[in-house]
Amino acid sequence: MRTTIFILSTLFVLLTASPAHACLCGGTTVRKSFKEASAIFTGKFLRSEYRKGIKSQFEEMNAGYTGKKLDYEVLVYVFEADKWWKGAGTREVVLISDETRRRDGTGSVSDCGLGFEKGIDYLIYAYGEGDEFGTGACTLTKRVARAQKDFSILSKLARPVAAK
Image (cartoon, rainbow, N blue to C red; front, side):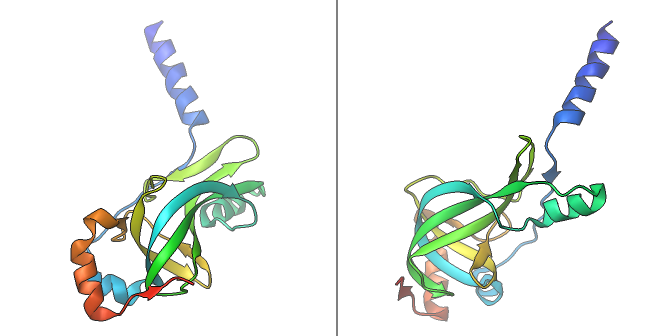
């Protein structure tokens, strides 16, 4: 009886769990990140929200694999930027995450994502094209309070510009 309950419980967890993406990181430096990042800024985390109309690479691959086009939203993080070392220079910045939420209540998550705390200032190393930026656990993104070494090096690479 215990074996049956164990097998049924395991099957339930496997069949109802959301897909997750693995994250493997290599080391990086501030100088290397400065060269590779599309944008580098400081800003206060305002909120997270789900938005439609943003493509998720994972969801698009999933649709190709299953043959089903799923209706989904992508989790985004909204920041109020104050200084830019590289990039757009705008006041509001939206970072796109890998996390999705589907209409049927399922979705996908990534362990490469970062958790942001409302009202806290962050130094963001963002990657992407145009105005679609993302960041993750493999970047040097961190709280401003822990970024003094980064600021010291960044100040030698570029002069920060106030957000517009």
